[in-house]
Every structure is written in structure tokens, then in C-alpha cells.
Amino acid sequence: MMRRDRWIIVFGLFSVTALAWYYLTLMADGMNDMVMIGDAMAKMRIAPWTAVDFVLMFIMWMVMMVGMMLPSASPMILMFAKIYRDQNQRGEPFVPTGIFVAGYIAVWGAFSLVATVLQCSLQDAGFLSPMMTSTSSVFSGLAFIVVGLYQWTPLKNACLRHCQSPLSFLMTRWRDGSAGAFQMGLSHGAYCVGCCWGLMALLFVGGVMNLLWVAAITIFVLAEKITQAGPWGARITGAALIAWGGVTMTLVAN
Image (cartoon, rainbow, N blue to C red; front, side):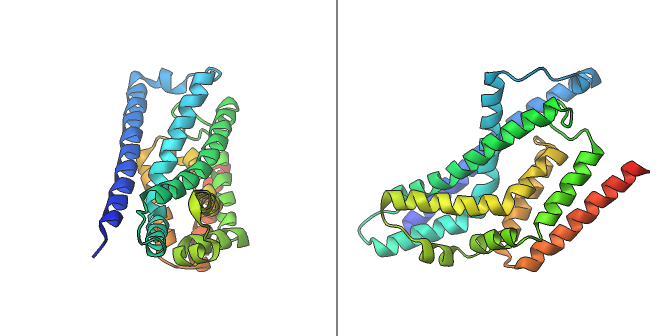
């Protein structure tokens, strides 16, 4: 039987994830309303971003990363709470677990900042439409190929190995106290970014606000971490992405 505190943590993770997806749904509906205005709106030239635009886009990326990554991080978070409970029989694991999650989210916050800057640059260069989808088949093909090649790298395999082994990660990197919990959250977040940054970059291809595309990547990230397929799983995916990119580039050439 799961302890009461474990159920509370599960409920908290589910609630935060559900709220993030609800926010994304509202934003996607707003984007669909813009598309319905007409092709003129869809094809208009985007005005330079203001500071408010940048902040709002950063918030969107941040919420999206929370909604996409918390499900795949849940095994690690629950394992952290269990170990803390076992080592501190008189202490509730809520606060240190929350600090661990805060460190994890902080790393994805840094990634969201980079993604926001990249999105602004791509839109200025004309590679993204006002609806935040790729306007260039060449760009899309190259993105698939680059991400596919990364799936074969030792860095990808090393990061994936740490993400797939919550107990091993925590036993070898355990730090006591609140500062230690935050540091472990940062460390796990860094491995997750190293594992998944390429897959997140594909949002620029399929559409940043395409919820089906976002959901597909979320499910794939979760499956990649819990199936224990090892490096060959990443390599098979990488080969498929490279082939997909090659087909996209070939269609453009023809």
C-alpha cells in the first residue's frame, strides 16, 4: 500500500500537470481563433517582439515544459520522496520533495528562456509562421536530421541512462538538507535537458501550439524513460528521424 504522503505527492504532480495542459489548451484555442480570421492573418509579417511579448512567450514555454516533463520525472520524484521518508522517519517528505522539484523545474526554466530567444530569432528570420510552425521544408528536414544524429551520440545515451535509473541516480548523488535536495533537482534536470532538448526542438517543426504534436512528444519522452530500451531504442528512433528528414529534403528537391 502506498503511504499517505506518497498519494499526496502523486496528486500534487497530477494537479500541476493538469493545470499546465489546461493552460496550453486555452492558448491553443486562442491560436485556432486567429487562424479562423483568415489567411491574411496567418500569413502576415510578425511585428518585432516587445518585452511583454517575450515574457508571455517565456511563460508559455515554461508551462509547456512543466506539462511535458513532470510526467516523465514522476518516477524520480517519487523515489526521492521514498528515500527521504526512509531516512527521516519523523519528517514528512513534502517540503524537500517540493524543493527537489523546484530545482528540476529551474533547469527547464533556463531551457525555456533559450527556447524563447530561439523562437524570436527564427520568427525574425522567417522560418516560423505567426502560428509558430515551420515555414521551410528545408529547415524542418535539417531539424529532423540533427535531432536524429544526436540520438546516436554518447551524450544522449549517458543522459538517458541516468534518467532511466532513479534509484541509481539518487544513491550516487544523494545530498542532505534543503540545499542538497535543490542541487539534486538541478542535476536531474540537467540530465533531462541533455536527454530531451532535441525532441523539444522538434516543436518548432510540428508547431509549438499544435497540441497533438506536443502530446506525441510528451508520450515519446515518457516511453523512452520507462521502457528501459537502452541505447538501441534511441538509435532506432534516431535512424527514423534521419530518414524522415531525408524524405522531407528529397521532396523539396523534387
